[in-house]
Amino acid sequence: MSVTEREPGPASVPGSPPVPGRRPRATVADVIRTMTDGDLPVRVSGYDGSAVGSAQHGITLAVRSERGLSYLLTAPGDLGMARAYVSGDLALEGVHPGDPYEALRLLKDEVRLRTPAVTEVLELVRRLGWERLLPPPPPPQEALPRWRRVLRGLRHSRVRDSTAISHHYDVSNAFYERVLGPSMTYTCAVYRSPDDTLEQAQTAKYDLVAQKLALTPGMRLLDVGCGWGGMVRHAAREYGVRALGVTLSRAQAQWARAAIEREGLTDLAEVRHLDYRDAPREQFDAISSIGLTEHVGVRNYPAYFAALRDRLRPGGRLLNHCITRVDNRAPHRSGAFIDRYVFPDGELAGPGRLIGELHDVGVEVQHEENLRRHYALTLAAWCRNLATNWDGCVAEVGAGTARVWGLYMAGSRLAFERNGIQLHQVLATRTGPAGEHDYPLRPDWTP
Image 1 (tube, rainbow, N blue to C red):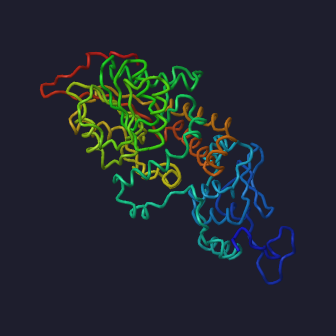
Image 2 (image 1 turned 30 degrees about the vertical axis):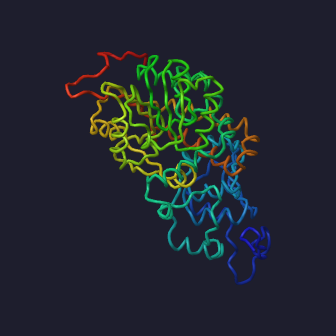
Image 3 (image 1 turned 135 degrees about the horizontal axis):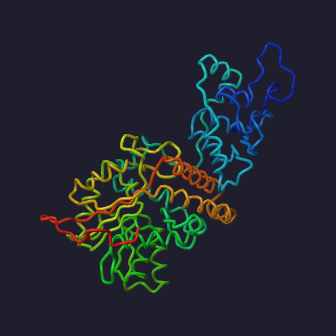
């Protein structure tokens, strides 16, 4: 019998009289009071009928089962809450699961956690029952912990990178169509105004990249980590560029090829299912990397940027677009929730580290800008799409996976808004031995 099926004893029934000589069973409310300080801005209700906190904001965290409580107790922090939420044992009531932003904002701003004394913990566990400390199996959406991934190869080896990319990007093309919209673009958009539509902002992003790279008809573009081919198709269709994209996701490559055929771009555009390390070694006029750097590993930056440099003709331009930490001292690895449920093995560095690594391989940075606020707007738009298309998304990937995406995107939006993470575009040239390159005295593109 599972922990969720176990018959409660007489003392665990709310409102029942205490059993002589036995401490009263601890409730979910007791657990929350032990782990927090001050007033709670949200209501927390338990499967045992107990409740604590304020209903002022109309948001309730409902712990629906003993398994949910065990998740919270055996993996404190965001991992335990994620497990309970993804499995459906913890519900956020009062917000849509496709966009739980307001609940996350309240929890971040107004909940004060505390570390209880050892004596408090022991007393609480005795009253709960020691079986509550037996970790339930994690939800199926969770990736293996880092130490177990070693069996699939060293971190950022080819095999392990392929597995990590597949975990995130091969969820379902139909799911991504509902969340990302017609552009099928899973990277930060560029907003001229907060009132821009998501499609307008994604088109503006591709135009900005194309202009920074000074694309003109007949040029050759390599787009590494090309996703569903958005930049490849845009460059071919709008700028007459011969564009090649490579991606480690087989599902992305298949979708991109079909889109290229639908748009009649097969003479100019191509997408291959390929590791960036295996991209053709011929020299391209321009290279774009939009959202790939997060996956290559900070220790691999020198090899990564050198690989791009070697494929860029002398004088050509390289644009790197990626999420970063806010400084160069922050840890590179992501937190437990992101690592297990979203981007296994993903790593971020500060913008200074990126620029330094680019210079160290012999390319010259000409311009960089921070698009942090643009990513917050992009994520808000994706959450709206997920909420609007919730039933179709759940039918496609299941409720657990859909909840992962709502939680991840709303939490990321909050992090970008609060300057917890950033998004930097860095433009560089492959400058020749005598200082020659094609970059003008002032930018030849519209900021």
